[in-house]
Length: 95
Image 1 (cartoon, rainbow, N blue to C red):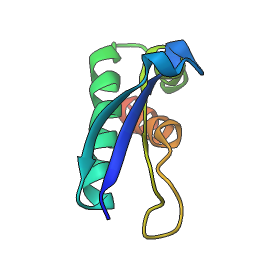
Image 2: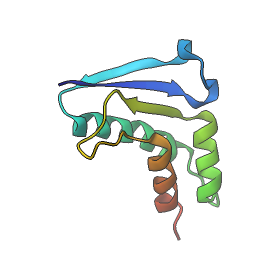
Image 3: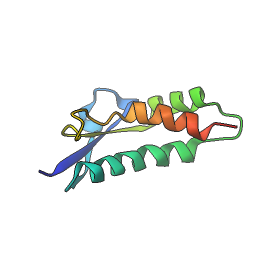
Image 4: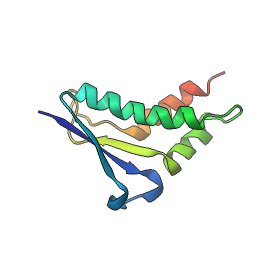
């Protein structure tokens, strides 16, 4: 079963006209990797010296892209870009 990734703009919450289909992937793992890449690209591009994890996360939830997969993963749960971004912000802003 193929998995579609659809991306919504956090800055245009609930405006489906701003959403787009990123691609279709053969496996959930491939779709999740594509979603993680979208989030990581935003976070690394917007990371600045002195910017803490919470501030970077607020930037993401305000201006970043929110990718989603159209089905559940092997564990029965779906991918959460916000959960992933929150953890990545903590990792990127350590030390």
